[in-house]
Amino acid sequence: MEYYLNDLGYQVQAMHLSEELVTVISVWCGAVVVEEIDPLDDTKRYPALNVQTKEGVKRASLGDYILKHHDGSFDVKTPNHFMRNHRPLEP
Image (tube, rainbow, N blue to C red; front, side, top):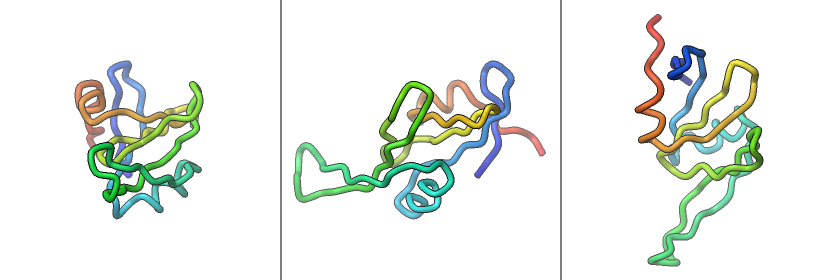
């Protein structure tokens, strides 16, 4: 888990979803592990997470970032959105 500042100046905790961290992240944020099926090849399946957010359940696919906000709520962001709006917090 790493700490970042968002574009509003708030500190968030974030984890980058990878196959190796699916279980760790699901425990951290209380998400349900699900399986995504490749729409072009139904023999390919990938782990994903259903994360409870303030807006309802959001799907986190491999490569997405799961954020924990200062108020304890979680959210899911694509890599592009995350990189544009967050910067690492200096130690």
